[in-house]
Length: 271
Image (cartoon, rainbow, N blue to C red; front, side, top):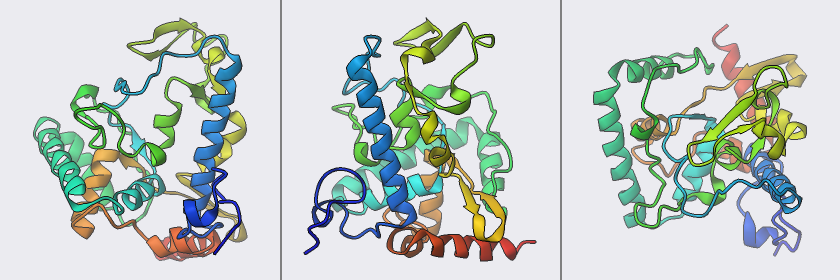
């Protein structure tokens, strides 16, 4: 039995928290980042009177086509793999209905995503700038009854920080923005970012979700990010389910150096 404290920072024993994830893996590094973000936001609002009215069950930011990184989706897939069949089936059916609706309403948008996914290089080719109604993209992991997040422990960075924190370009300069819109329930506040938790010291780690720094090879690689609904679609195409994380062994069971070596070899094939 491993009596050491878990690498993620939860304070629990590793055997009780993440016994099946290598402590130096890519997945482990992201779980540490999640914990650091949560701790910084919590510490900020313990002493900040301007806390935003984000409450359990609020779904204001749960309808969007925001892109997330592949490793964030892999952590979600791994969490879903622990669910019972009925729960997984219910969510996947909802995801399929949502996707069918989006395909019909935004065919050109889907064509762009599909074109990117068929490209042999794992690079973000373009930003997604189509004019879409955000309410058309409900998160498949939002519980229909309670309106709570079903993947709360492994929700992506954007879900953890929206309206509560800022980092890098999300903090406008004094001269650029006078009013910063957070969400419709909060509305616009003058220089709202000043009331939010500052995560700039984690900016490098946040960027590394979609950016692999291959120091040993003096190279770097941008890894493709997609909206969550499209990640789900790609998982179905490749695996027929959402319960298998891509390159699971390399991202979860091995030191991150092996994953970086794998990605370098893969990128070298397309020179």
